[in-house]
Length: 174
Length: 174
Image (cartoon, rainbow over all chains, first blue to last red; front, side):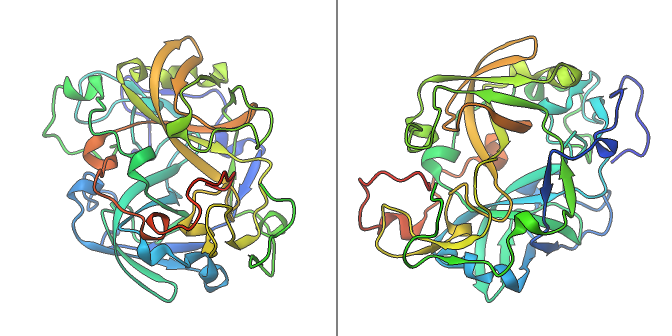
């Protein structure tokens, strides 16, 4: 993720990081991955076929009851190294800029990311999953079951993404 | 949502609401729906065919650039009226209990909910969407584009849900 805004990018007048919080999150665990920095991360979860490990704090272990019966989960995590103030962004894979709410960039007012993962195993407080693309040590916020009736929309389209000018360029922003 | 734990439910030793926050969220807007209390809410987003309105705070409006090209979005919101301490729950539609991480209940350590919605229109800071089932006035946390390549898993299964004993019972917990 960029340390400084790129050409064409726009920052907020006030950084959400410096604003009083409206609600507080507690980290309920962390995620172990193979990736120590953003350049090493896979471009997206789809490309992340390596197994990652979700470590839930033992105080929340009861919350996993029945999770083992789910084939897929939604993992919410906190992008703790992401800036929060770049509201218009210039991803490497496009020559035009986009608003943060049209991107899956970690850089956004509330850097909560989500990944749909395949559940491989549950062992105590440890979940092995496939489909995560986050940094090693990323704080965990939530685990949810994936319901295709609500969550799966195969026909969904992202117009700007189809028309992006440099689809093969690597970006850490999507 | 229950004001008190039901039979078979289990609460955490320490309520996350009373713990020091590890990260702070800023509310970036709010959601207008037809539902003033939990009993009036649709059972799930799939059943919520009424149009809801997402009001983004004008200071974040630039972030909507290119959002109009998305057919579907993921909306993250804060379930501000939900308890955070019931770790094993007894939904009305089942005779057995489940952990909060196997449920889409708003009651969880971090009451961040997400809905996949169809985008109907964007007008300034106002988005009309279909597929939300939250309370009127719910605080908005984030808007993300829905990428079927990452987010759509039609074949996903939730084992416990298929076997639930009272599938027709209304519950505000899913």
